[in-house]
Structure formats: structure tokens, C-alpha cells
Amino acid sequence: MFVLPAALVALASSALAAPAAEKRTDVSSIPSIFSQLHAFDTSNQVISLTNNAIPPFSFNNWGGLSSLNLFDNFFGVGNFDGRFNDLQFLLDQSQQIQILQCSVVDINFVQQNLAILIEAMKQLLLTQICDVESQIILASQFGSRWSGFIDDLRHISGRNVGFDSFVSSQLQAVIASLGGSHVDLGFSGSNIGSQLQFVSSNFNEGFPLSRLHSAWSASQLALLPPSLVGL
Image (tube, rainbow, N blue to C red; front, side):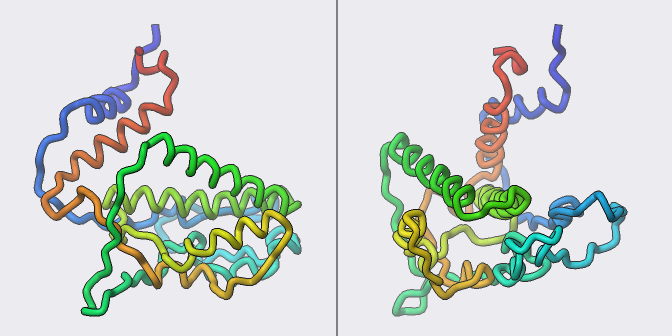
């Protein structure tokens, strides 16, 4: 008989229990040594995992791949996924944070839209980059960026929650790119977040963070096979 690990039992209890109210505490996320060590070539170098800061890692022409030429020009060396970008909310005419009202849409419609975007990302990566090593690095770069956004939603990253309105408005250019039309849109990764749009939600200063943790824990349990959690 399979015995559920104690850590998993604790996670299940946290996810399934009714979240209790608690005082909100802001927690800053400090990237671990593993998240800073984004990639390395084990064939010719040895990495010592110590408490010492890791020098900024460059991917320019990494592994001799010309497809990675000027890779670091986008987010910058030491800012692999843009997590250290400066974020600035859009302001209205009275210099207050501009608020975009969230609208309720059928969740299946939202899932369809997200699925389309993800599959389009795969298409873009596979059809416009031919080196599998570069595909892995780019997928890791933007996968890490999405993971960072989840941490923003959980309010554990220390960053504000929002989306860059200018960058998101360029979606039609991405669609054109999939059709073979490639245009420099005139921004770099380090600019992302400089036109951050705030969106209303049910989250406020008194919102119990335990509910955010419960939602995240439940989603992690959902990734496990039913047999593993005894369902």
C-alpha cells in the first residue's frame, strides 16, 4: 500500500481546509540560487552551489549557437526573465492609478483563449527557432516569467499585479508573425512593466492570504495522479 508522504498530507490539509482569516503580511520573494542559475553547460564547467552570489549569466552565443546572438539584449544580463524590471502603473488624468474593471466571462471561454495563446507560443517557438537548445532556453525563460506572474497573484513576489498594456496590445503583430510577417515592434524585455495596467478584483487590503495559499495548494494537488492522493 502506498503511504502518502507527510509533506503531501500537509499540503492536502492546507488546500482542502477552509482558509482561516489572518493578518496580511507582505512577503518579498528572494530568488533562490537555483532560480538564478538558469542554465549551464555541464560538459565543460563545474558549478559550485554555495551561498555566494552567482555572477550574471550570459546566453549570448551560448554553446556556440548563432541563434542566441544578442540574446541578453532583450531582458539584460542577470535579468533572465525580467523579474527585476522596474514596474510603473498607468495613471489617469488626476495622477491616480488607472483602474481597468474586470468583467466576468464564462471560465471555459477563458480556458479556450489561454489554450490558443499557449499553442500559438509553441508554434512560434518551433517554427521560428531551429536549434532545440535555443528552444529550451527560450521556453525556460518565458516559463519562468509565467511562474513569476503566479507568484505575483499569490502576493509573495513583492511585485505589483498587472499587465503591460503596450506589449499586450501588440497581439496582432504576433499573429502576423506566425504568417511570416516579422516586424521589430520597438521595445525590449527590460521595458515590460513600464506601462502596467491595474485591474480590479476581489483582492483588497483585508483579503486573507490563507485563501490564496489554499487555491495554489489545491492546484498543485490537481497535478498529481488520483491514485497518489487516494481519490
